[in-house]
Length: 88
Image 1 (cartoon, rainbow, N blue to C red):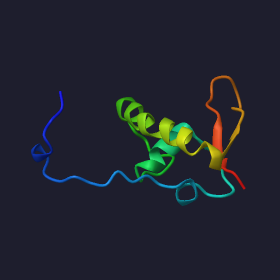
Image 2 (cartoon, rainbow, N blue to C red):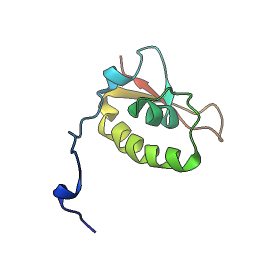
Image 3 (cartoon, rainbow, N blue to C red):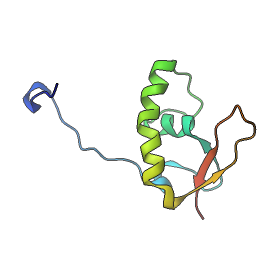
């Protein structure tokens, strides 16, 4: 159910990183690593499964929104995700 804005102590702008602000030019990242980076975490940070699921809810649309600025690589195996990097 929607809540009134007055219910919240503070509201923040909904700003997202641009790809070149988030990713290194010479690296490729899994969606899981991008999810962590979008939250200011180290790409290798240990997080619980429930948190990772929530972070993926942010990362997948971010990748789709920025697809024109990204390249994608095949996953190393069928059990691993694909990798994304900056288009150069």
